[in-house]
Amino acid sequence: MTAILNPIIPGMAPDPSILRVDDDYYIATSTFHWQPAVQVFHSTDFVNWELLTYLLKGGEVNLQGTNTPAGIWAPHLSYDKEAKRFWLIYSHMQNMAGREFNAEAYAMSAECITGPWTKPVYITSIGFDPSLYHENGHHYVACLEWETRTGYQAPGHLAIAEADLVHGGIIGSWHRITTNFTTRGCIEAPQLYHHGDFYYLLAAAGGTGYGHGVECGRAKHIFGPYEPDPTGEPIVTSSPRHLFSLGDPDAGHFEMYNPASPMQKAGHGSLVETKNGEWYLAHLMSRPLPDTMLNPLGRETSIQKVTWTDDGWLRLADGSNLAKMTVPAPQGTTAVRDRARCEDVHEDFSNNVLPLKFMTPYHLPGGDWARVRNGKLELCGRNSLFSQVAPSILATRATSMDYMFTTRVTFHPDHYSETAGAGLYYDANNWLYAHLALDPKEQRIELSILQAKLGTRVADDSAVAPIPGGTVELKFYYDEGLLAIFYRVPDDSEWHVLQKNLNVVYLSDEGVNGEPGEIGGFTGLFNFVGSVDAHQHDSVAYFDHYDVVNH
Image (cartoon, rainbow, N blue to C red; front, side, top):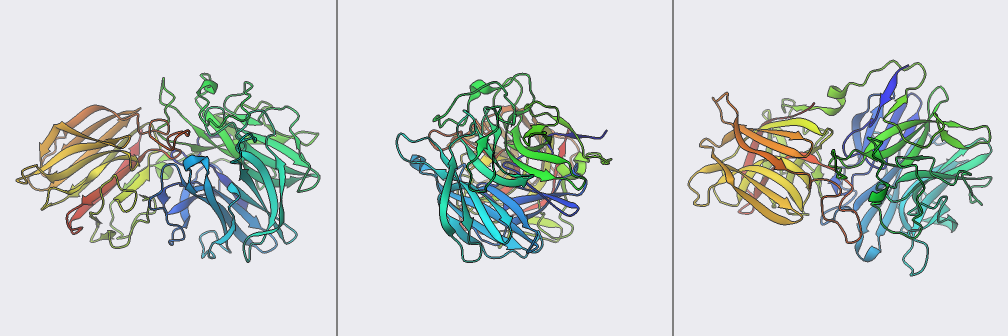
């Protein structure tokens, strides 16, 4: 029997929403402060998942100035079979200060997953993590109602209402369903399904940390009342021992780390029925660095096979509730995972098109600052990498704990504030940048390293190399949180060490700084090329290639 190896989408791919339409499977995931927003992966064999498109790529959202980990949260894909239309609903988290969590939910639709999509229509600001369910021409939205009152169960109720997807807003009133199906607390991300005689409401619980899980309730009527799963526990989790955390806003729950499992944080699930009637649940997960609780790759997407019991409850196929790294593939599947095709990156820019996998923090890539022509990527320098407005960065998701990243850059600065190079990036406060720049006396071009650690600028004066011609090839080896950087100049076949054994474990979800009371981040590590020009915004860096090989 063919097996599926988890994660099916490694690297930053959190909050998966899975959907099948005919013979095609789609998964949409959160993108937070990254643009284009809402990445969609596609598969026809249920084993190989490749990036297909982004759904918010035309300036529909402005993420400039967004603090980690706000931005675009938990997009939900659905398909209205009667109207034959795809639907997307998503929440734009705009503020998390003071635990106010101000989010706006929008819906949009298309006849084809790749568009064109309608203009987003405002639905609600009640909370976050909305989802849509379509039935007999009616459309229902399930959402977390965010609780701000003192003494009330946090984070709030799961609520359901009928939505007006044409004009926007809610029809009638919200129906509060529950604040929990188990004692794990931190309930969120409700998703509605109908199977047999019941409506089922799946929800994430336990916070998006080590106590995370998927819990379930069911009802005869869409507005309830809903009865919880009789086990009183999540139906899927990485940490199956009992947790009581009602009213606890902590999303970390490091005490729930499961040393017996390579998979941690399994939760936030989404159901799909295959072509032959089998059921699977896609969910997020993380893989910590060895002997740590730091997760550099962020929250990834995995999948579990599930079945329905005789009395109509959902269970993992093996009868437990512990998420597994290896699961049975659908019957008749013979495909084998092609990791090189799905995960490695090889761009030589020969087609003069900005590669699909490139993303940019806080604003859209492309425009007048990033273009491909004459077989080269051209980056015009702008804000520093500390900027949450307009940094000139093109990045791809890191998808392995052991990989090599190479690029070659040509750059001729004429001012000390102009730089160009490559490195590792988490957000505006946390990154590492090996770059070309003029030396302090502005007499020669040098290669050096600059880091941002929790918002603090850290320069490494011990690792400096002259690059007389302004062209250098860079090679980064990332191995379980340690980084080695090498360089070579044209006509030199030998690689030279710029710096070894750089500890970059802080570039992880738990290692960065976020809003008070929250985990630092929910995204993950990226590789990037970039350029800075705080002089005249007129310098241009040229990149010949961009390659990432996972080991």
